[in-house]
Amino acid sequence: QAFAGCAFKRFELPSTLNTLGQKVFQNCAELDSVAIPASVTSMGTYVFSGCKALTYVELGTGISKLPQYTFQNCTALSDLVIPDNYTAVDNYAVSGCSNSLRVWICSTVPPTLSSANAFRAASSSTYAQLMVPYGTSDTYKAKTYYTNYTIGETVPALSAIAEAEPKVSDNSADLAALPAVAYADDAVDVPAV
Image 1 (cartoon, rainbow, N blue to C red):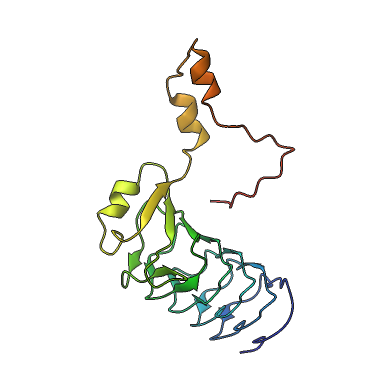
Image 2 (image 1 turned 90 degrees about the horizontal axis):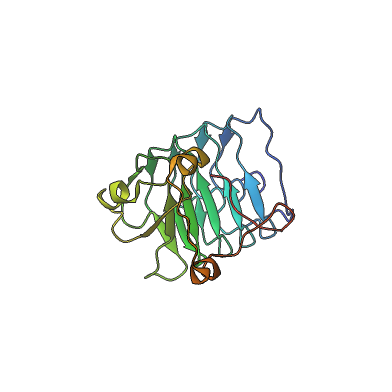
């Protein structure tokens, strides 16, 4: 509980850090984003519980299991990125968070969920939306406990797009239906996956 209840917005975790103990950042009400370095190989329960301003989290690759109640009552949490080396997610690892929570899972192999309640939103009947790698949604849907979730796929890698056969249309209605394009100068927040 080293920093529990602290009032800082950002906290840079050192790359030499090995362990995030139980409740270490619990109830840090101003903390809004965090990136856990790959050096962290152990994480306790309730680490970010009650961090109500936390909106974005990028988990490090040093651990492979998301512990129980890690992000409990992080009511502003809207995006959580789980690296491809994670193999398990404990019961209620993410619970009581934003009803628009998106969990970006980078692995083509679904992590084992200890229950259907691994990723719960603010209301007891709402589950987080899971975003998985392109072409893997059927694999996720076939895995135990994933049937409660809405599962979307991330955009395919550029190499897959380059290999696809182009579709050319001379119909202006087709062109009008295309979505808007974001350019490098536009401000667009997209989590790294």
